[in-house]
Image 1 (cartoon, rainbow, N blue to C red):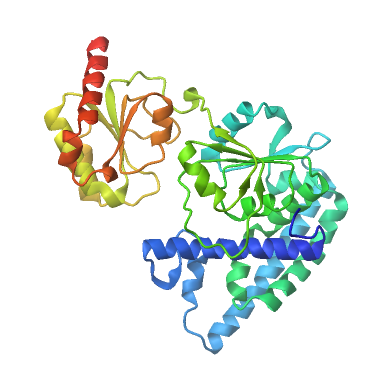
Image 2: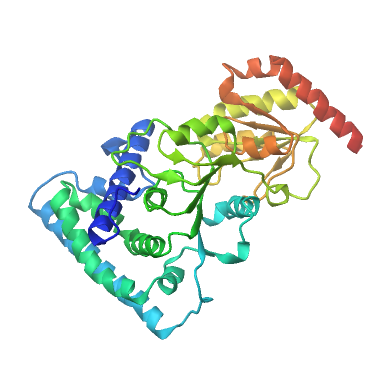
Length: 390
């Protein structure tokens, strides 16, 4: 039974609680990364660090921005309602199941849909454009009243109104998604969102087939102020993560995700190689590993830098000097028999392909890794793979 009423007041509280959790998540990450002002540079709260010194101009700017944040929602609502009336886009009639994911994780979501024997053709991306054609017309009209009521709810219940209003960028989508699920409780929704606002809202809406697909590590130490709901199907990369999800959710069913390796790995035969997935904070240990590896083994070393990390140019140049190849594809990876990282979630993709995986973080020093019997046994098998290809 949902803790939230299926009316506007219930939606105010549901979306408000999702914002509270989002802020708690950002502050938790900021604390872990020891960022000043408690805000993370790649999240929405980065902007609030500008407003640290209260005063007349501070409050004037805050209230001005709050006014425009609300006004912008009316403008966005009018534009999308115009799309609806003019029918610039048409969708097949009838209920559609929803996918909520980023482009980089679309492959694992498709694998999950196939594994659960759901129809790929029945799913549609939960974008604003698609959702306005799925919800009932009166729900679109009520959105304008919802903006006013929700803003009032924030003003009455929050002591940091501006921080909440920064999250308004997704308000229309959150509203459309919520009312569509309320009106179509039997809909299936698949997402790789672990515990952000979309997962929180769907888990609390009594969606009959809510599926979460694990896409990375999950932190079970976050103190969320609002409780999550239920997951109908949880697709894990490894059973070790089940307890972490159960810290937040009631999990009704779970299984291990079976990946389609053709969507993960390049068709080029690079089995007799070592793939090092780099992470900029740990580049010193990666340089030492690469140096040791090339001094000891005559095996191809492929290095890929993290696409979202900022690197020290000189150190990156040194690391790549030991590599036989720099891998630049962010979608498919080499099918190397040996995978090395400081702690990349790609490890589980390589485990599914029967590769040997080692984490630098598991060893006190690089020398300890090279003395590990299991590592040396793996290297013998990689050499055998190399000899078969000659």
